[in-house]
Every structure is written in structure tokens, then in C-alpha cells.
Length: 102
Image (cartoon, rainbow, N blue to C red; front, side, top):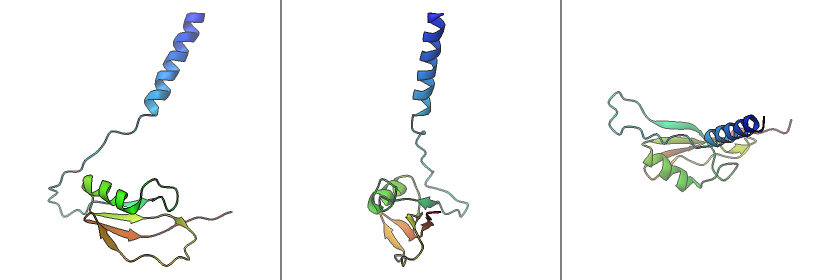
């Protein structure tokens, strides 16, 4: 009985560890010929609950082959948006994810 419990605990630990691994890195091909524009529509910076600065996020996006980002930090929608800008060759568009208390 002890061996079964120990085996079950080991299998559970391995499963939890496996599920906690980050996803495999994806790099988009740089030579798309179908007219697509590669970008991301929902990104948070450290201005709300993200981890990176806008410069860090733009650099990572450029390295992944993206050409635009819509930065959607949390807010109430009353802040005037920043004008579009390019960082590391990536177009950053300022937006907001509306956060409420109720």
C-alpha cells in the first residue's frame, strides 16, 4: 500500500511540474507573403499587471516577428490614450481594458 501511495504522489508531482513549464517558444516566419500583418491585440505592461516595460515588450515582440501591439493595461477608460508610437520597429497602440469594482 505504501508503494502505491508513493507512486501516486510521484506521478502527481511530475504532472504538476510538467503543467508548470512555460509554453514552447514560437517564432513566426519573417517572410509571410499573404499580406498578413502580425500583431497582438491584448498586452499588459507593468503599468497594470504585466511584467515588462513598453520598451521590453516591444523588443520581445520584434524578436518574435510581430509588427504591432495593442497595449491594454487596466483602467477605467477616462485616461486620454497615448498617441501611436514605434519602439524597436513595432507599432504600439494604446488602449484600455476596462476594470470595475463591481
